[in-house]
Length: 342
Image 1 (cartoon, helix red, strand yellow):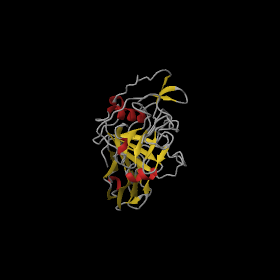
Image 2 (image 1 turned 135 degrees about the vertical axis):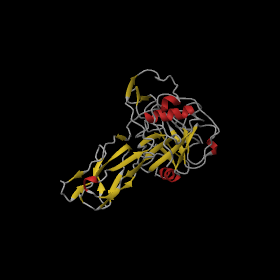
Image 3 (image 1 turned 90 degrees about the horizontal axis):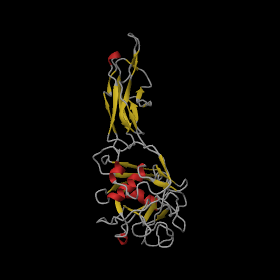
Image 4 (image 1 turned 30 degrees about the horizontal axis):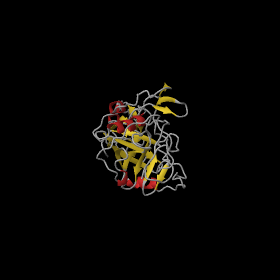
């Protein structure tokens, strides 16, 4: 099979069912990030010296993504303010037990929040403030968008891995892409050592570091490329294909780059560039649902994805005779991380 980009006939992914995957040229934006919460001392309000109830409070500090949920020992959820501060909803009598637990961890990669001084007995003004600390390697910070004007590729067809990774938070895990969809998240482990140019291209486009040609404005931009794009071609028991800013199979980033054929082979969950022939890689890619050894040697493989259950759910969506989903399936966001595997 050939997965083509920009040609109608021979492309499994380009137009009609044939032996391959097809790709093309550019578009889209959005951003995704976590907020760095500054730590400050937890607040404890006491009644006057003779009072019998006390309001217990605390702060959340560290890199904090969305999704953190705290609960007190009375079963009440604790609201967390923008500055990380929280207080118990009910004042507690002096001498009563108190506790704060993490009900749900943040959704950001490798973010873990722990509670210090999270339980004890109310002892008037001597109650220790509750501190919640969230750690991890941190989420990728958003990069300001840029418009670079018309003309040739600002990178002159060359974009390095160092440029793609510039500013990405450090971490002890493998370089990964987390593709969020309406059907769940797909996590792809990338292969920068074996496929440096292919990985640099994908990471640079995903993070908004690699300039691409906006097909609507006809100018080069630095903007997150994949967020919001479609999986425009899906074939059950074979693969899912996306990364075309036009959503037709004929779009791309405004440039092409050479193949990197390595020892990597098409297995279940393989991540590879679609193309319209040798050395025509751009932005379109596919993820295999099954092993597809007949594609080996013709496509640039640059990673592997899981879980299979989400890939299968994506591949099973109803499609028309042209393999286009009847209901749009989006890459809601593509996040690049070096955080350790959970």
